[in-house]
Amino acid sequence: MGLAEIRELIKPVIKEVDFSYLSGKVVALDAFNALYQFLAAIRQPDGTPLKDSKGRITSHLSGLFYRTKNLIEYGIKVIYVFDGKHPEFKKKEQELREEQRKKMEEKYKKAIEMGIKGDLKKYAEFTSKLEFNMIDESKELLEAMGVPYVQAPSEGEAQAAYLVKKGIADYVGSQDYDSLLFGGLRVARNLTISGKRRVRGVEVDINPEIVELNDILNYLKLDYKKLIWFALIVGTDYNPDGIPGIGVKTAYELVKNNNDPEKLFKYVGWEKYYKEISWKELEEFFEDPPVIEINKEDIKFGEVDEEKIRKILIDEHDFSEDRVNKAIEELKNAYKKGSQKNILSFFGK
Image 1: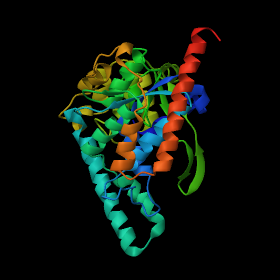
Image 2: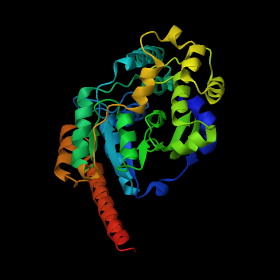
Image 3: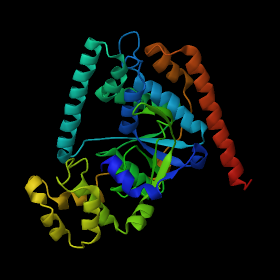
Image 4: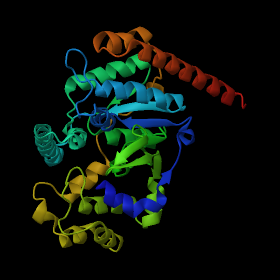
């Protein structure tokens, strides 16, 4: 769903919170979403990502290590969820993203040639590419940190939504609202990008936000199926253009006042724009996506493997030894503090 437009529509039910609100909660973080954020945001002033002495990108590891450590220090338990094989009907969205990435690469190169330093980081943020080796490195680092992860068979957000529905996690952690379409009951945003950020040239505070599916449905006076219809008309990852000529407000009014999906999608001309896939197939995919069935006992919050962390970050990728060692101690203390808190709550203190 188009983030800006949808956000404007549901703004009254979005709650801005601080991290203490999420202390003691379990968050199923969309791993690809977070890693792309790290690759985009953690860069040098000239827009180049962090690299080790061998020229390998390390922005994703820096973000994953330090920002995950920060979340754990806030008392938040984190489960990362990695994407599996994307459905065929996501191909167009992936092609559009690749096209956008290449356009920004060209703009970045031109800005370098022309010496326009102010635009370098802005363009570079959109050139990020998540490689297979980065995913493997990220999983290895999470294991060393004692942070569990789940490998989804298909969409990570669908698997994260499943974890929330099963009561294994309290929130889906993602910058997108798409997990709501998979039945994710609660979504937390801005967990990995909070703090001061420059937005359109202005420095603003970005704080965590939470939104609940039931609050959205009650506020919009829609049921879950109608929310999916609405999203399909506006545009999702599987039909990114939505229905041309129909904006968010019109789509909302159409869905709210129509109980017959066959008539609704015929009226908006679905088949004219999407001959290869029916709205019904997409509705069914959101309602029943491929997921791995998991129980609470399958999720293990492990121990910190100090030597493995040092090997990955210091020996392999030239991270600052002092800074990594300091963060390891902070991570261990955060786990210890969390364990003590659990013991006290068990005895009702």
